[in-house]
Each structure stands twice: as structure tokens, then as C-alpha cells.
Amino acid sequence: NVLNKDLIKNKYKVNNGKKTILFFAGGSIGSDFSYSYFKRLVKNEFDANIIFVCGKNEKLKIKCENFIELNSYKNVKVLGFSNEVNNLLNISDFVITKPGGISITECIEMEKPMILIPGNGGQEIYNALFVKLSGYGTIAKNPDKLVKEVNLLLSNENLLNKLKCKLKKHEKNNSVNKITKLINTLLK
Image 1 (tube, rainbow, N blue to C red):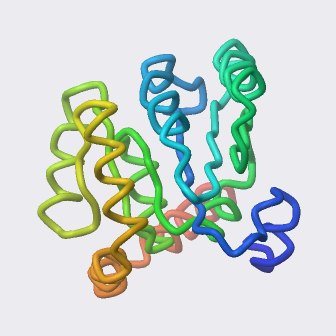
Image 2: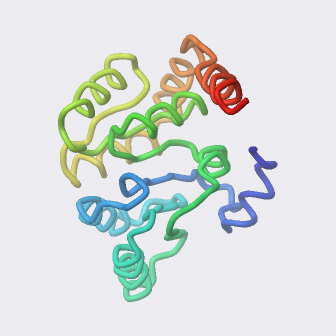
């Protein structure tokens, strides 16, 4: 259930006219690997909102909150586990995430361009290639490359719109509706 954008922006205190970057730490448990990417991104002090979702990794959440407080960074929100992924995606301009299947699917369904950081190998390598080759996002293999890609998307509205247009043209196969229908059938 997606709420009104202004309500969500007010809730997360990002209703300030700046672009909003949603950064998933990696799965519901949150990956410590993403911390170096997060630190490098925040240190750059982009004129944007950053929402970093740590999942259930409480140590990572505390580490990030301490880092932000110690350095007095503005427009950065650190969240733990959230049941509001759709709402967070709704208010974001683009997403930074590992190329996990669920994250990629959610971003494609919500038409959100992606910057992908390295995943766990295996299927995630193919997911990242799919996103890049489809024109839905880019890949940042290290924290410096992440900053470069974020800078490109924040400073080049045409590039961001090009990615969004590619996502809008993505063939909708109604997979979410099909899965819901299957679950309801199995539950009966």
C-alpha cells in the first residue's frame, strides 16, 4: 500500500526540494560490506537526501548513526528494518542497492533507476548485468565509483530521465498480481 508522496516525505523529513537517494544495505539483515560505500557517499555531502536502510543489522545502524552524528552530516536518515519499502521507493529519485532479486524487482516495478554495488556473486552478477544492459541503472564496483555515479545522476537530469524512460517502457508482466493470485488460490 503506497501512501501519498507528501505524507511520506514529511514522515522521513525529506520534503525539502532536494533529490532523495534510497540506499539499501543489503537484504533484511543488512550488510556491513555496504558501510564503506555509505561512508564515502555521505562524506561527499551531496545536496540531496540520503535514506540508508540497514535492515535488522542493529550494529550497522548504530555505527552509521554515530558516524553521521560525529560529523554533523545533514539530510541523512538511517533506518533499521522497514515494512515501508514501497513508500520509501515512492519518494526516492534513484536507489543504491546490491543486485538481489527482490531489490531489483521492486525497483523495476516502481520504475526507480539503480546504482548497483557488488553483491554476493552467483545470480546477482547476472542481475547486475541485466540492469545495466537494459538501461535501468549502472554498476559501482567500489565506493569512489559510487560517488562518481551518484554525482552523474544528481547533476544530469537528462541521464536520470533516460533511465526512468527505459524503466517506464519495461514490459509489465503483472508478476506481482500473478503471485498474489497463486497464493490466494493455495490458501483456499
